[in-house]
Length: 298
Length: 298
Image (cartoon, rainbow over all chains, first blue to last red; front, side):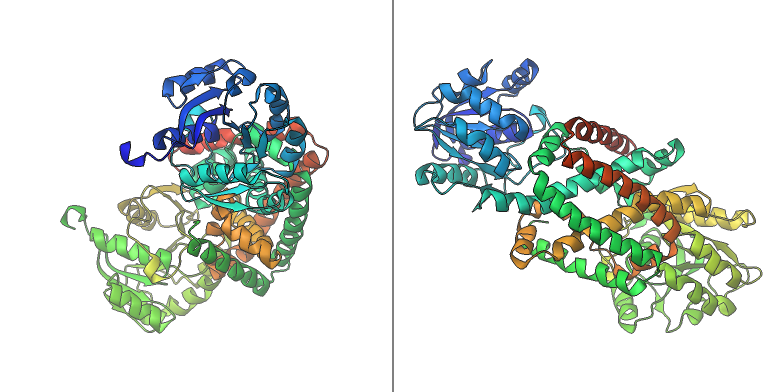
């Protein structure tokens, strides 16, 4: 659409991984004309063909290394556990001056896995768009996914300021607000805002799945009582989330420990019928909802 | 609206409690012309005045007893812990042939608290519309709340079949599907589909609230990662939910025990980096989401 055209930010963008995030970013770049060419790579041939068919990439390559040749920006959009190996694979093919970024939900482990493979003259700018849905795959993406959402950039002290600025402009151009953070701090914040909620949602849906057959049918029937919100979260991509928990183990276990203490306290209040304690806890949590609504993130 | 008019089901309906559920039911009854007169009672004068101002009741009374005089149907829509006392209070004023129903999220404890107070010639038909939002109060209600949702009726073996049928027609007339269940079975099903999800949401939002100040600000900022769904649930009415957990203590503790075992297993899989176990659990939960979407409850 002509009214959406902005200036070209990168001549050639290469996308490694064409799932929900990769394909959404490609669509957003294309709609706004932010790149002259988008090259895509995905491990599965079917995904590459789907991507070409949907038209959000201009060209598909059969290897990650050929996909990044001559690219000004390379976006790694694969499960975090696969990021290190794929960067090692593409490293020899990267052009001098190229910028490599990623979209992983964990930053400390990604930086550790990626940094040693980045060649001289190539800039690595780790990023994390805090956006997503429970869907996955190239068909699930949409150009508006990042609008009004945050993207967290976690550069290291030695990062090239120009490269950081260019990655930030890309995210701003697709509608996001950008924040900078230390990778370890990012991982702690995301452990409580995203990783623990997903872990808990997976757990309760799993608990319900193990109920006797007749109860399980009723769980589905009466899901509107609160359960269905959890099932939406627990429908997220299993491999992506497996990798998140393995890569952010320490922060997740820390937050899980706090959660567990608090749940035990509530359990005790129910067992001993301490209505005042229950009401106090349930009242406090309303305030945080109000703050989220006011912050426009609801 | 004329096209919504159905036959009058009850000459006079009395609503005891004018919060989210009570006021939504009143609006739905009024829109469809299901009653000739709706009389309302709420403990707070302000709520009664708001209800009159919004026009979803025709008349407000200052006591619950005067509100039920001459009523053909009395709907108790107060927190479950207050239900027994309010029925005891209105009992002497109930007309012979009147039907008393309720909308409580717990049925065993409500039946136990209410049944002894129901006078000869009055029919008690316990009910639970599985519908709601995180909002509360008379302004929060809307006529469409029950459309496409389930209402569970838990009559006892000796319940008057005609009275049960009339309560069921009311819920069907406001757009719900109706199911019948034993009160104890209801409480077990709701413990996993509704009560445990709320308890967990309250817990995780509470855990986040206790974080150091700077982390708490970031929790609000980056809530889109999954956390905000929990804050919505955890913004529900504190008194209503306090009563639910106290009234359904046994079933909630039973489901909480199962959840806790499953969470501990996941925690262990993360600690020992058992990726295969994580992926297997995360894959299983996708199926239950699919079933809920197919059942039209998503």
